[in-house]
Image 1: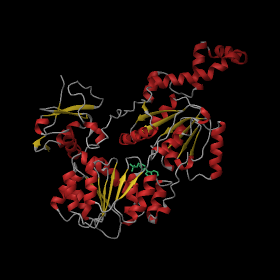
Image 2 (image 1 turned 30 degrees about the vertical axis):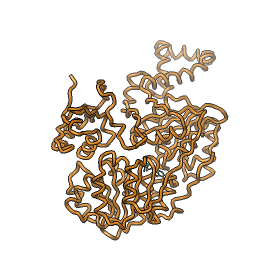
Image 3 (image 1 turned 60 degrees about the horizontal axis):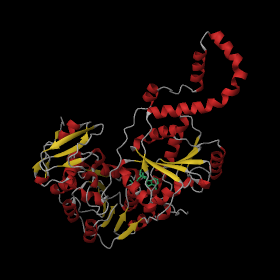
Image 4 (image 1 turned 135 degrees about the horizontal axis):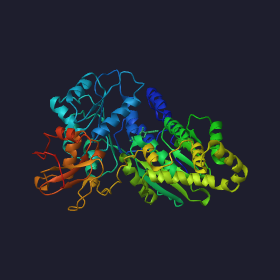
Length: 559
Ligand code: AMP
C-alpha cells in the first residue's frame, strides 16, 4: 500500500505570512483536499469541493483566500457562509489562527442569537473577512444593502447542511448582493440536485475537487470507535488504555503540539511513551522506533508524517485520537498493526461533527466500525486488579523463601496482622493508585459520551435524517441532561423538522449537536434540548415564529 505524498505547504504557493502561521500551529503537511484545492483557489477559479468535516476543508479554503486578501484595504473582501453559529465561530477562529502573522487583518463572525450592534461595529472598523450564518446576514443586508458590495471571495461551507436548514431563499438574497465578478467556492459533503442547481446558477465554470476513495481491505484488524467531545480526548485515551490489553500502541494525532501534549499526559500516568513528529531529527526518530521495537517504549504518539514507514510487529493497537483526513490515511494508519498475520486492534475517537467521516470510512473499507463505550469505573478497577494479579502471581512461588523471614520480623516489630502488612505493601507497590470502586469513581468522573449516530438518509442528501421523526407513537426515553419541549405547531401548520431546527439553531444560538430528537405530530411537535440553560433558551425563543406562527416552546412533562 502506498500513501500519496502530498508535498509541502510552501510548494503550494501560499503567502509567506500564512506559511509562518502554519509553522506556529504545527501543521506538517497539507491534507489531500488542501493539496488539491489550494492551487485551484489561488489561481482564481471557482470551485466545488466535495469533502466532509475532518478532511481539513476549512484550511483548504481559508489559507488561499487569506493569501489573496489585502490587509491594507479596510473593507470586506471575503464572505464565508456557514449553516450554524457553531460552525461560523469555528471557521472564524480558524481564519484568526491562520492570519496571526498578517497585521491589520480582521475577521468578524455574524450569527443569530447575539446582538447585531457589535457585529456591525466590527464590520465598520474595517474587517476584511466576514463569516456568517445566512439568516443573520440577510438581517444585516436588510439594513444595509451595500454591505457585501466589495466582496471578491465567497465560500459556501457545508452547503448541503445550509439547504437542509432551509436557507435556500436567504442564499439567493445574498448572491444578489455581491458583485458578479467574485470568486465562488462551494464545499459540501454531498452533491444533491439542489446544490448542483446553485452551482450552475452562481458559479462560473467551477473546477471539481473530490478525494477519490479507493476500496481498501483491512481484514486482520478489529475496529471500533468511540464518540467523545474534542476536549475530552485526553481523558478518554487515559481510560481506554487502562482496559485495553496492548503490547505496543501507536496513537495518531494531527499536530506536533498534540503529540507532545498527549505524550506528556500519558507519561504522567506512568506509561513508557514518546512523541514522534516532523520536528524530531532522523536519528532520534530511529531511536524512538528501536525503543518501541525492543520494549523500552510501549506507546508512541505520532503525526502521520512522522509515522511513515514504521514497521514494528509488537504494535497490537492503533489509536486514532484525531480523525485521519481520508479513508486511505485511515487504512494506512491502522495497517501499522495486524502485522505478520496477527490480529490487531484499531480504535477511533469520533467527535460529534465527524460522524459523517466515520460513515465514509465504513463505506470505503466495506466494514462496520462498531461503537464501543468508554470503560466505566468498575471495568477500570477490574483491569487494574487483573494487572496487579498478573504481576504478583509469578512472584508468589519463591518470594516466601527469600522474604518470609523478613515478613515475620516486620509483623513482630510493627505489631500488626499479616493482612495489615500485606495491605500496606500493596499500597506502596501501587503508588497510591485507587484500587476500590469508590476511589476509582471519584478519580474518573464519568465523561458524558455522545449518543451513537443515527443512520442518515444519504441517498438524496436532502432530508435531515438525523432529525426526522422515527417511531411515531412509541414513548422515547430521554437521554441524560436533556429536556423535552413542546410546541403547538405540527404538520397541520406546515411544520417540518428542518423548520424547527433552523429556527432553534439560529435564534437560540445552539450548536447543532445540542439538539436531540424532533418528533412532529399533526397538532404539536416535541423536541429534545439541553436541560442546562433551558430557561434562558426558552426566553430567547419567546418571540420566535416558524412558518409565520408563534413557536411558543414550553417544557413538556410526560406525566
Ligand atoms: P476541518 O475538516 O476543516 O474541520 O479540520 C479538521 C481539523 O484538522 C481541524 O482541527 C484543523 O485544525 C486540523 N487540520 C487541518 N489541516 C491540517 C493539517 N494540514 N495538518 C494538521 N492538522 C490540520
